[in-house]
Structure formats: structure tokens, C-alpha cells
Image (cartoon, rainbow, N blue to C red):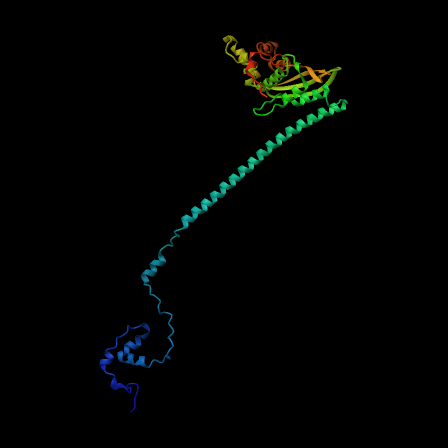
Amino acid sequence: MQANSLHPPNLHTLSKNVIGSVLQQHSRPEHRLHNALGPQLFSMGQQHDPTPQGSTRAPTAKRGRPRIKSGSSRSVRSSPKQPPAKLPYADEMKANIEEYHRQRRRRNQERYRERQRQLVVDLEARKHELQQEIGQLNRKHQVLMLGVPTKDTVWSVAVEYFRVFRCGLLITRGERIVGMDFLKAVMARDLDAGMVLGVDALARNWAVYTQYFRDVQIRLDRLDQVAENSLVATTTTSITITRNSLTKIFPHLMSDDFDYDKEREWSRIAGRLVNQRLVMRGSVHFNWDGTSNRVMGLITQADMVSPLLQLLGNLEDVSRVFRRARINPESNIVPGEYLDQYTLSY
């Protein structure tokens, strides 16, 4: 019995019922030709599939690729590209970082300028210290050039006196007063200081003088021996008159207990004195006691009239300045009850 492709050997076992019971698969695009030939030929073609058993058919390039309608494709291409959602946040972070660096640079610049200012202050302070050391060394050099011993002599005491009181007697609360230690070490207890007697009274006058005038500076110009136990020091004293000076030393120039007709004159004099710098030539006379090796007399004077006359222009105004002042024309503090209010603690 011969078989051909149209009549297989087991044709008698294949009935329409058997073939009809097979579920028809959905047609695939690549099998359109088989669908056109009919279900029988499609079934027969599956039995005679030339693909070897166990092998798989290579997928085509078009398989599994979704189709996109032409209308939707055009809408996607025509719509503008939207910016990323995180772009504003990135800009904000960038701005915050720039602001942080800007503030950091500003702080660094402020710290740098502060360091520069502090450096200038330190240099000025060091300069002042060096100037004081130079003055001290010059005075010591002057003593050495004269061949004077450096201990227990009126010469050494005079030089040290101007070193200690070159800026008056500055008193800082809570600190030891070096000037008082020096005075007690070299001055007699019953010291004759001209306007006052005793070391305590001299120190109090020095403190009041330094407090009521600003930027007190006393310079030793030269030393001359006028007797065996006497020295005369030539000095230059510089002070600045302030409103505090007018209130405390020249209160009559600032008070209201005078006639109205004179008010303009007093105001004119006070206005010309305030913030003025006076440079006064003077001297200090040292009297030495060789037995006790202490200073028995210390007479100080500085010509205050000459700079005031140059400043005010006439003797009448100068006399008005000293009329009820608490300082005399020799630049010495005048004792009075007002000094009792000033206590010197040491």
C-alpha cells in the first residue's frame, strides 16, 4: 500500500471528529499562508515540521515589538521636552553652596583684617616700650658718662625718679603701685615736697595730676649738681587739657555761679583751653641726706604761664584762668578739702 503526501498511511484513523476537536491557534503574522490553505493542511504541516527536534526557531526582528499608532507617534514627537523635576532643587542647592562660600570668604576676610589691626596695635605698643627703654638707657648712659656710682647716690635716685614718673602716677585698681614703692624706698618720711609734706601727700598729688590731665609726659633733659648733696634736673612736661581738667582743676571756668555779663568771657576762655596741649619747661630740685641716704627735699616747678599766654594771647585771660584754680602757675596741685575725697589705696 502506497502512501503519498495527500493520503498518509494512517488516514483511516484520522476522522473529522478527531481533527475538529483540536483547538485552533491564533494566527500569527508569519503564518498567514498556512491559514489561507485551511486547517487540514495547517495540521499536516505541523506533523511534518522540518525543524529538528529540540531546536528552537529563531525569533524574528519584528516579534514582540509593540506597534505604535501613527497618531500617537506624531503627538510624542510634536510635544516639547519637559525640564527635569529636580532642576529647581539643583539650582537652589547651587545657590546655597555659593552663598555659603561667599559668607565663608567674608568671615575669612574679617578675621584677616582683625589680625592686621591687632598686629598694628601690638606694634604700636612694642614701639612705645622700645622708646621707653631707649630713654632709660640714655639716662643710664648719661650717669655712666659722668662717672657717678649707680647705687645710694642722689644721681641714681634722680634718674630713677624720672623713669618711674615719666608718665605721672598711673593707678590701676587691683595692681601694685610701683611708684609708691619707689618713693617709700628713697624718700624721707617727712619729705619736703614744696606744696605738701610727706610721701603720701606727694603720691596723692601725682595721682590727681595724672588723672585730671590727659597724656602726661615728663622728660629729663639734663642733670646739674649745684651743691655737694643737691641736684637740679631740667625737665619738659607735656599735658593735654580736657573737659575733665576744666571741671576738676578749673571749675570756675565751667560753673554757673558768676554774673551773666561774664558768662561769655568764661565760655570763651574754656572753649580755647579744651583739648589743647601744653608744653612746659621746668625743673626738679633734689636735696640729698648723706646720713640716711634718702631725699629730704623735692621741689618741682613747671612754667604753665608761658604756654597759656601763647594760647590765650593776653595776661588778663591767663590771670582769670588761675584766679580760683586748683593748680598754681608752677603747675603744682594746690592742697584743699577737695583732695580729701581722693583716697590713694596701695
